[in-house]
Image 1: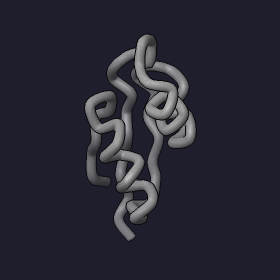
Image 2: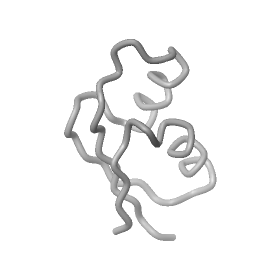
Image 3: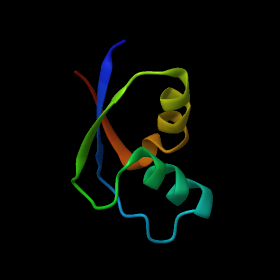
Length: 59
């Protein structure tokens, strides 16, 4: 599977609780922190839900 690098670029303040929980489940806690995940259908769904908060790069 391909890997995807995610970076949190926007604040979680004032966002829906579901979106905050999704970002936390991806492993992102602070702005400008990066994390890599395998590109599984579950991860893709989570990324699509909060894509407006993230910078997404293929690795």
